[in-house]
Length: 516
Image (tube, rainbow, N blue to C red; front, side):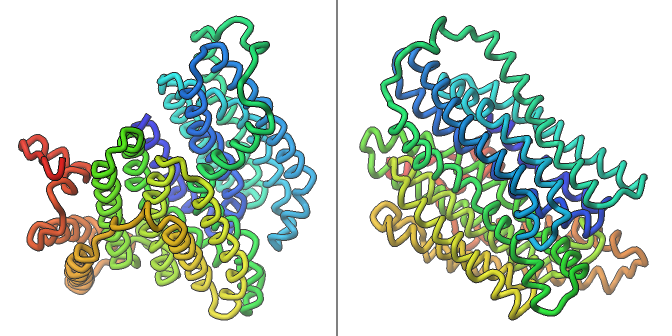
């Protein structure tokens, strides 16, 4: 399941690069305006709700009741998703108008069909996960992403060849969501047919009554969904306010849409940067839950601190590296180096989301959900309130600053509300060492970029960006890890927690018995 999640995350981020190159800034703007609606729906179907449902299934002992509970949740989710579907279908015009672009209405209607598949996908993925059978979720997730990405890229190719209107292209591209959902549901259906659910489970009584179940779905399931969809929610706020804010700042509608399309590149980079922290936080959750159940407080503290410190260090390195190479990365991936400062600032989100995700798994392992939900909602409301004001005053860079402010508020509130659970996790001594290392890394990368640009002038700027990136990125990685070794920035336990590095150390026979 970890491998499947990694493949899906990489596919979900990487396809946008050729897609943007084919459809241009305006085409990318059209797609990205509606993408958060799809992304939030997929979070419900793939991570938030299945994890919550699997927890309920594990806690239920009777086999008939497990299946009956899943069926009952499916029916509740079906009602909720039908309401969302109707709202998106009937309210598409109003939503598009609120985004300052009435032509987006058909694109919204296209993506709405995906919500009809969510109740079935999320319920039975969660049921199988609760039965410790991960293959249905893993296979359906990969097939869903492969189908969706293939359809989107085919639509982009067709749109370019046929000179199709960007809005019609966006409408067709968003139909990839229900098509992929249908393929994923087919995989789940095959597993259900093989698995042979208990006979008559639909008539079996369930311990949890409807009001309690709905309350738990909204609180526990809703919190898991919110955490997984934090950046998507902030992107949704951008969809409603960036174009209006840029027009207030003085741009025409066409210019504002073009700038929004360039700004949306940053979301691809952040999604790539989040792959490590998402995988790491997910992997550490079972260990935290087990330590909490056994009341092994010291072990719990070590696991939590190690995960947070390694996630924070790696995300800092990624962010600083991206900022140092932003002109080259931007040009290499998207053919132009526009809005480098705005995109670099937005990429600082990689650091904050790494901390946020780790905080969440720590609180989740202690069955603490309300504090996380309150913190995320407060940050989201901050983004809504300040976004258009910031953009209207200082331009598109205000959108990045509003995103960072909202994430800081989320993390700050989680610290205030969960002071005891989150205490003594961050080492400020380690952060001081990392600051020195990162300055050296950024300086090295910048010097290499300037030296190569000056010493080997090329007529094709994209090829130049490729050459610089291929040399500067490995050099930056070497400087970072060499600096960490030299300044002893990590303990052995923390080295072992870093993928690739940890595996290498294990092969070498390095182990730790620190505080066991």
